[in-house]
Length: 222
Image (cartoon, rainbow, N blue to C red; front, side, top):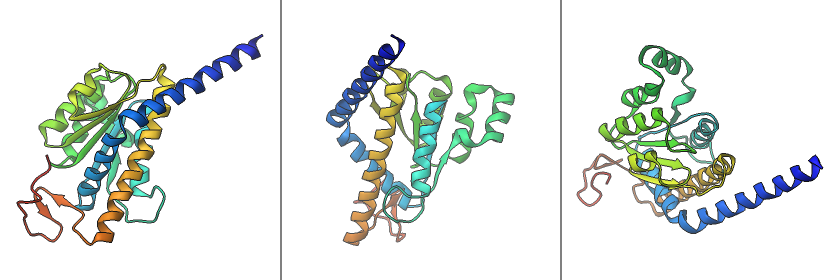
């Protein structure tokens, strides 16, 4: 009896995941493609991705930064990406001195520069420490993106842009976030490769291409 119930629950889980991924494919691929292109501009110009999450979302954030510092599929240069939750001494010191709600925000203030990207992952979209990080990131001139669960949620509202997964359970949302992370990496790699093949400057940082010549056409990051 228990085996039958477990099997049925497993089937429901798989079907729920399939539906969430299908909705991701239908509604969010264009957004993830834009993110990949923007991230390629920022990182190849010497900018940085900061990422953070709690629990399982922390693991997803660290998965993303590992793919950028290392590689996703094809060989390419390493790019700067930091998972703020993995800075254990900073996290514990800030949590002890300022409170857990500030463990990411203070690191964003320390490491973030105008034009950098801040990626915040949360299944609920309601974690106070991520909301505080989003507020700090926007104030510091970072571009804030969020991967969250279903709308409405405060983190999606606090970010400049968000991919919100309509999943039935926390597990389904987290699993779909991993798909989104891999899609973002694929779009990033494609943007970098396209720019290198075409010979055009890949990147713009605060309105200045990598050759150091300001360009009104490229301009600053929107």
